[in-house]
Amino acid sequence: MRDNLEKLREEALNALAAARDGETLEDWRLRYFSRKGGALTNALGLLGTLAREDRPAYGQFVNEVKAALETAFRERQEALKQAALEAELTSGAVDVTLPGRPPSYGRLHITTQNLREYRAVFAEMGFEVYDGPDVETDENNFGLLNIPPYHPARDMWDTFWVSQDDNLDPTQRRLLMRTHTSPGQIRVMQDRCPQPIRVILPGKVYRYEQITMRSEHQFYQIEGLAVGKGIRMTDLIGTMKQFAFKMYGAGQLRVRSSYFPFTEPSIEADMNCVLCGGKGCGVCKYTGWLEIARLARNRGCGHGASRRAEEWRL
Picture 1: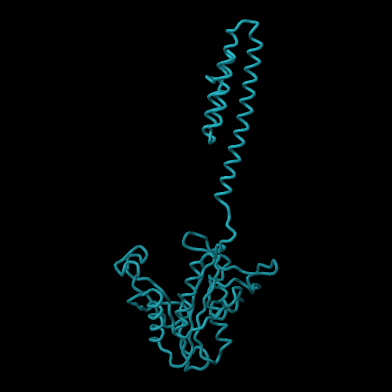
Picture 2: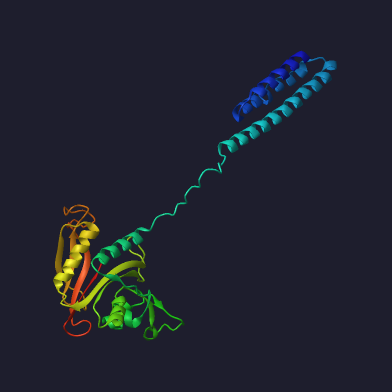
């Protein structure tokens, strides 16, 4: 019996030395220490078949073999862990002599990209960018644009009012988040009068509306304004045609008369749909046309009745 245990210990140690990874190490443990069918478990089970006087010596030797194999198993397990760690460190070592990796700066937001393209297109046509504040006065946002106090656009459900106190009386409210970029027209005409004007006014606008997949409480608008002598409706249409060609590559521009309050005459500019080529799709509502701007031409705007103004909103 003792010879068999010696042979078992030698065989187990040789198999343990041959283990190269965690999987083979686990197979070794199950082979010798499993409670069901393990080699040492079976050897211990032979204790009952021995004579009474031989049992103590055999049992003690079995325990010695078991303790030796357990110690060898732990040592081999730790050695494999260290070898795996060293291999990982070696494979992932950093070569400090190599040049550094350039950092990633990300990309501009699609809205920022579009705004820059709009500005570049109008800059080629001689327009400058005029920026107005996001927080406006009631006078610039409504009053000077012929929007009286009883107009529904002033309602609290359409406008973010800015107040420094708790007074909610509508007649006492003076500051608000601009609901459109049109106050910029007021400011630029006040600043430049009586000089000619040719500007675009891009920027954020704010409206207290329900947020959906198609609408937000904050969005962007771009308005344009040209004030000077000899400006005609054909200049306005030509500006829009050049913008549509430069920005979208549109081949056709359709101009239709339309009605917008406080401007006369008013027109709407549509371009042929760049997605379907005018055949009709879901984006253009199967009309083949996309509205790109609302246009107006005012007489007597600015300094002197002989001056003309053209404006649009994209």
